[in-house]
Amino acid sequence: MKLGRTKVALIAAVLVAALAAAAVFLLGSSRLLPPPPAGPGGPGAECAAPSLVYVYATDAQRNAADEITSTLKVMLQQRGVNIVNLPVCVVPASSFEKKFQVYPALLLRGNVTVPSDYISYTFDDYKELHPLLSAIIAYYSGVQVSYGYSGEAFLVTGTAPLATIPQEPPNLREILSQVFLINVTKVEKIAPEALPFKLDTLPAVIVRSSYNLSRGAPYIIPLGDGFYTIREELRGNLLQSLGVFAYEIRRSPPSILEEGVSLGAAGAPTLYILEDYHCPFCAKFYQANAGLLLELVGQGRLRVVFVDLVVHPEVASTHAFTWCLYNETRNAYLYFNVSHGLYELFLKGTRTSLEDAVSIASNLASSEVINSSKACVPLRESSLQVLSKSLISLGFTGTPTFVFWNPATGKGLVVEGCLDWGVCIRKEDLVNVLDWLGRED
Image (cartoon, rainbow, N blue to C red; front, side, top):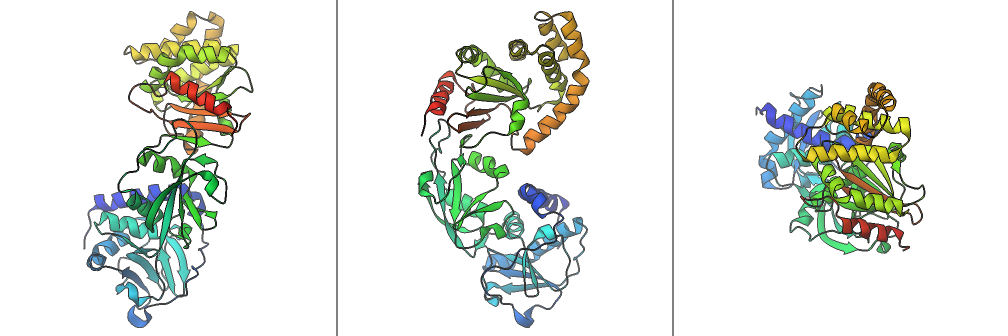
């Protein structure tokens, strides 16, 4: 069967995205995971070596064997592995004594070499390809995946404002089954105290199963006592799919955030604002809350750190200039006022540029300071690229992002994106978060 390049490319792209968080762990590694506790068993002489073994559990899966195995062969060929002429052996699940995590399952029997990041584990003369790979190809082939193991899911709630889980979608069990590659039999909301371990991020999605789920997909990690969750890099995506755009943290934010411009007294509860001068919601936030921020800073109730996360490349030089201006003067209020002026222009329809920043700053600083700041722009632009890439690698992918942290209570809150189509955080939200940050649990 011939497959369209577009379809194969789409499946490959989805697979790469799903495996990206675990690329460092998997790519280039030749170590295979040990076999699961269940005893091995094989189809005997049914499937000769070498061969691609397709294990199905339903008639629909059996009927899709040609399409799914053909897709796999084309994908591997794009990775430089030619198994196009490898015989395919199609067998029912009953041919194996052991269960597989997902059906259809894809195995390689005999001396067949494939990239190690495609292999989940080996047993006897078989290599099982990652259940995630099998599930994705089946999904895009329109075939219902079935699961060999089951488990229960828990939505672990916190106490932070804005970080509550809204009403559960009706297909939540199906969504979590697809994420964790097991049959999720029920979903229950619990408090973090009900778990035998501590979590440093809430709310959280946890699954308990007697099977080692970390074998199925590289983004699933064990927490101990049969509990599993997903890697931090992908946690935000899962929470957002459940309508959660803010989460509570119980550990210090990444130190890289301190590379921003700090306004306020050290030791006060801190708000890190990850911003971009051409971000409309950043501009709306400034417009609505600039006065309150300055008031809270003046009262010693808040420290604000402005962090450059350049999403629109055309504003890199503008961000570079305002940082250089601060670096020359160490005047965070000057930085704030220039930024505020840029956002005001942007809300009026001006696609602000370096020239606009220079014009605003010229009314607030000497020509000597302006010239020195302009001279440092090229060097700062280069470091801005590194900073933005580092922030993105940590999961900060959009603006505005707000990171609250109180070192005195060890509590924090991360808000990613806007909570509505108006202002991302309203004045009452800021007050409520600060009150919560100051309370001892």
